[in-house]
Image (cartoon, rainbow, N blue to C red; front, side, top):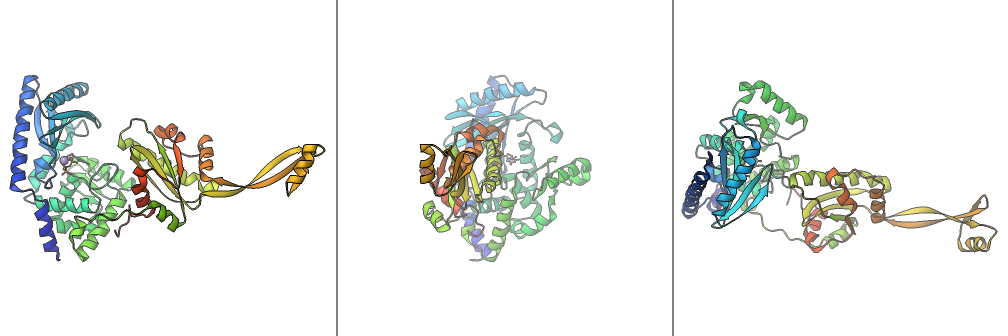
Length: 454
Ligand code: UTP
Ligand code: MN
């Protein structure tokens, strides 16, 4: 298939149908009505705004979660926004099918209505970046900017987002560290089309700085500060937010995920296929046969973590894994790789070159001129005296599990602060993982989890 054919087939799958559009539009009307009525009945001065991909018409078919932002006047103090925002969210949520309170930087309400997820997020009604007070305030500005600049390229955004999903590089959340929807939109707007962006994977990386709104000219000091900060932190890309010169839109994009985009783009242009957008399920084999084949050992620490958002947990798990990676070689175990995550409980997996080490232990014995002394002399192959006391030695096999326990006890592993105690109480498993981690163990050991050529 050539590129055009592939694109045509993908578009047929990801472009929402007229039916879906009508459903979504109806839903938005109803929700807006409900929000307005609730706001009025509570006597609040709040404006409802739709943001996110629904408001920009860049959502993928079948994937139409609603983001409804509840914008308070700028002079409302933060604590009141927090309280009244949540109260309002709950009041609206109460008129929908179900709802619960969710936590990000600020609490918000996550509701469901007619089978669709509806986020009700309190924010400030900002006019521009100077007004921005909370992390979510920019979304209204983003929506407006994208709608003013997208110029009918909605389907190109859809293609690019589907491509990124297919290659596992979509989403800015901590478990992905990939491209956010907004970043995908900016790149399409800046470079013209899905194909243009994919063709420029190398060019964009070399340019390093993307500045669609010319902040470097309009606000040189602030924009330069952003570029400098992000470059010093070795970010692959600095995309100065079109609505805020202080922010890098790709701040959460990792080198690994840019790398996936880089290689997958080249591969796609060389051999276009649907597989990039809709990858077939790869078989998950047995992690135990993988272990045997590799001749390595797998140590898994499993533990309950204190109630903590993923954005805080994941970096701490990674820091701890790096701590083990540094501490274990000093004890004679080489770490070939590590993998962390949370499946019910938090886990740290370490692949090691061995599960046991040999060690000499000195055995102090009794005084030589006693019955016990003579027995000690008989029993051991090599014995010597230091003063009147007998000594011997023995070679022991020490398991990495014992070594880890000892390292932890002596505080000789650099661990993430908030999870140190949890790790000290971890279950330590050798060459075995519980059922729910079998897939993860296989993907890690085989490196299929990260294979660029999958
Ligand atoms: P979403 O993650 O829901 O993105 O964030 P989206 O554009 O709606 O795309 P999909 O189709 O659901 O995947 C909603 C809004 O939050 C802001 C943006 O304004 C975005 O439009 N946002 C989110 C960011 O600015 N950066 C992020 O990393 C995430
Ligand atoms: Mn969304």
